View 1: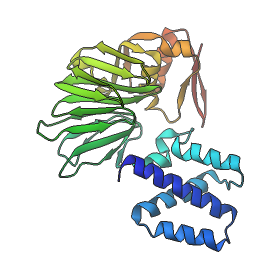
View 2: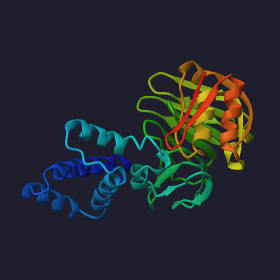
View 3: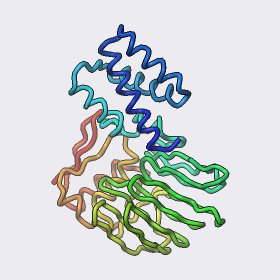
View 4: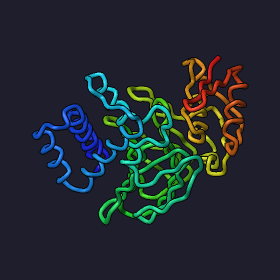
Length: 295
């Protein structure tokens, strides 16, 4: 089942649950729920996800506003504690928490999944395909005639055999190549990247291509971050994946600043404060909620 199919199933389960929650004795709604569950294991998993969500939040929505809030909660991820999002758990086959992990894919290829990351492996005997749902991943792809595709949502990466990093950013996606060549596509355009090249896609016409040393691709694999011309927001995204709550950059101008230097990701809290200090910014942490970086 594709990622978009799972999203649709989750939306349908949400609609049924919320209507039944407001009218628990309605025989028509009970029948609708039972028919939905009878569609198979994926439908039951989606409905159980909804039930667990409301058990966690302790909320019983009874208004249109609550319904809208529910969709935001389930489809956008939980605002507080995004790594533990039930939506990600529903979609993902593999996920990490506060450290990276090297994993074997069904295609026989290898991925190193960064902290706070998640993917769905859709490979079978006819295709090699992975959905990167959250965070970042470094792929080592064995060369053969079957294309290896990474789906990042609005952007798709295709290779035959190479080593490269893909990542979700706060305002888009990033692709960087360590070895070989990759093809990057959105809905209407295509780019080719060679070793030592990076592309940052921010939607619309906002695409930036740059170069970097090939050995600096995905340095987070060694708990290091080498910021050479990266944006402040990009670096925060990498640190954020290692912290228990979301990190917000409060100033757009600060987010867009280009930074350079090295950071030790084994201590992400210290790394974030060191990064902020380079721009005269403050780090304000609200326990149980998240962290704000502001000037």
